[in-house]
Amino acid sequence: MKTFNLIRLSLFQMGFGIMLGFVQDILNRVMIKELLLPATIALGLISLKELLAIFGVKVWIGNLSDRKSILGYRRTPYILLGLVSCIASFVLSPAAAYEVQVGGTAFSEMLPTLFTDIGLWKLCFIFLLFGFGLQVATTAYYALIADIVPEEHIGKITGASWTLMVLTAIISNWTIGSYLKVFTPERLMQVAEIGGVIALCTGLLAVIGVERRNTEAGRGKEKHSITFAQSIRLLSSSPKTLQFAFYIFISIFALFANEVVMDPFGAEVFGMTVSDTTKLFKPTMGGTQLVFMLLVGFFLSRIGFKRGAHIGNAFGAVGFGMIIAAGFTLDQTLLRVALVVTGIGLGAASVSNISMMMNMTAGRSGIYIGLWGTAQSLAIFLGHSGAGVIRDAVYSLSGNHMWAYTGIFLLEIVAFSVSSLVLPRISKEAFEAECEAKIAELQAAGEV
Image (cartoon, rainbow, N blue to C red; front, side):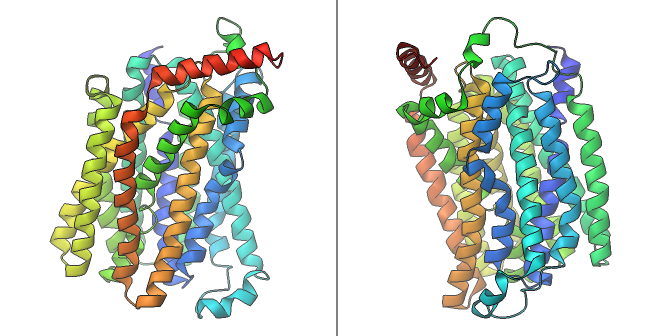
């Protein structure tokens, strides 16, 4: 594959860096702090973007893109469909958030109005549409990488792609933070509109023309010939497959459960403004994360997937322990050091695990990346929505914001530890052998 196309392909996640950074950091904080929505509702709304994947959208779109081409292309049309869906809903999200009317009173008093609030239902639909686009686009994108990028370069392309996504989120959040020093709803909506245009242009530049037409007509075509129902039977009857899916679940939970609570944590524990939190958490922790994603991704073929993940897990667990200590002592210097340590862990673990995920496909990239992506989305859904529940529940019992966030950070430390315990049991060779055996069983039964 041409180096120019590899570079272009790595640019795709930049648009998602803008959109996810805005939704998970800025809009999230605005809903909780400025609009006074309970964290359970605000984080539950944001986690809806992962809900459709739990019901099989990733496996379905992965299998569909394996089997059905559009105008001779197996991945590109699905990537573009998802991208446009994401951008349209993203642009509408800030205005819809201001239509929600349930904020400002005790949570128990809101329950009767939750089901009649038109603004809330509208925002639910918008986040579900955003989630549909996100799941479709990223599943097809990862499948495209698995299809056309040689194994020895997967770590590099993954590291570059995720580094650019995080870098874009940092730069955009910093810029937005400066713009929102004078905060108004109108300015928030303008940011979403401009971000949507940039995301669209970047996405089109990244993928148009990278995939060759009719690439399915060659060796390996038979590996993409099972139906969706057959793929579900294949996945559910394979212990090694389910074991790796669990590993992806617990690892992604450890990596991503924190991303929707850091800005509210800064606001409610340290008393920071929108501009302050936007300029601290993403640039410090995210900046360190992107540096180590790039470094680990470049050397991953030498380090190895498992060693990279182990390093990331260790730094991640220690980092969140330091964040807890900083919160209780209100020590902003310790907080900055903790964010750097945590960023090292997130960077090393994320690029190692995503690269491992794209390498565990057994020649059926759409189906398996769809399954790994489903486990990933389930972890993010439970991490984001669960963080909101933990924050509200612990705060209602203790009346202390720091104890509320401590519960979330402790859960992540546990997840990093469990991930390191499961990792030695993962074997690519055993997984591929089991996959071939299960396909042979389906063939013997006349189902393939």
